[in-house]
Amino acid sequence: MTWSIIARDPPTGQIGIAIATRFFAVGSLVPHIAPMLGGVATQALVNPYYGIDGVKLLREGKSSHEIIATLIAADDGRESRQLHIMDASGRIAAYTGSECVDWCGHVEGAGFSIAGNMLAGRQVLDDTARAFAANDKLPFAQRLIAAMKAGEAAGGDKRGKQSAALLIHGEEEWPNLDLRVDDHADPLAELARLEQVSRERWVHFRPFLPTRKNPAGVSDRAIIDASVQAAIASQS
Image (cartoon, rainbow, N blue to C red; front, side, top):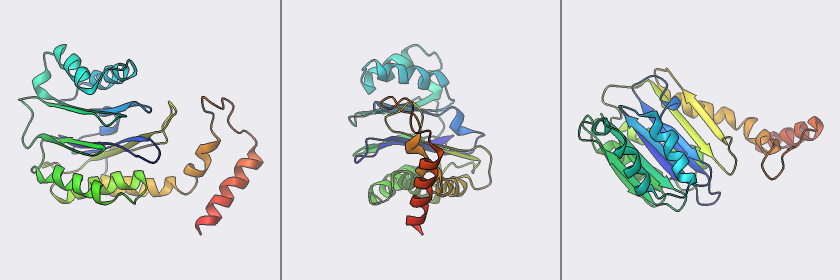
């Protein structure tokens, strides 16, 4: 009922997942990221523990193929699941159960993995892949959304549209960007709007938050406000 892309941004090492579907609140269950280690997308008749346990296994150093084998072995409902994983080294593994609804499958390329089910056809994934590869000059978040829009133009989820999400992590346990459109007539367009809004203030404020290397972050509001205003002015 979904298609998703997991990708790594080579300049920054960020890992991102974008998803769209004709189902409510897809961002609440599908995307899972272990910062700087990899991403997991669990979909079709979704098993949320594939994401939760998959991230734990990434942190334990397991390979993508080992993780999938472990997860599906413990699940009697595996034939109704779809799962794909990419680690920070670009190693990819995917699983599509025999009971997933057509069209369903997986494609991959340099630094990205795309999987989907209940789609209008394979072209959805192929066009998503082509758009991601072609837009390597775009900022990472915009590149992921552009790829998903190309898949939607090829037919997307054959039942229609309802929700979309974008999750990006850098080095920290908290996300660089976590956008969800849970119920909307045009969710990818709304996701693109929210990403644009994030560039108004959020991306300029984010560097001042606490990190593992700087546990206090920056708490001087005058410094924060001056820097945010300067960044905004430089975009004008």
